[in-house]
Length: 152
Figure 1 (cartoon, rainbow, N blue to C red):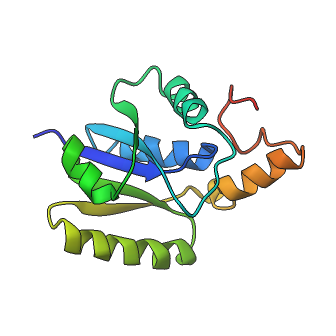
Figure 2 (cartoon, rainbow, N blue to C red; figure 1 turned 180 degrees about the horizontal axis):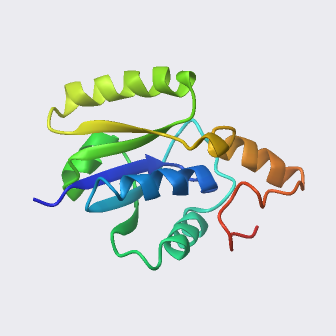
């Protein structure tokens, strides 16, 4: 049976930290679906189409990575696409506290979907999409934080 992981997020924008987690995940899973979710708590800086295009460009040479958009509960989308795992990256203890609560709730909702946490490489622990958006909005040099070829 193919091991499929769903890596959900807003990816607004995708960062080097996100790419790091996907690359680590590819050592564990046969396929990773990067799933751009609609989050009512967040206002996106970039369109869904832009974000999908960037992610497809970054992983164009790896057929094991797919990019999709979804709405609703992540665990329900896992069932829809046949993903047995939710992949989440952790940068700090605070991330763990937050993600653990979501993982427990997801497990209650859909018992067959496991959440797998991977630690960010130390170099990427300070990178978040929120910080990168602020740098972009204020016309700072964002190039150290996003994958090569991603230009705003």
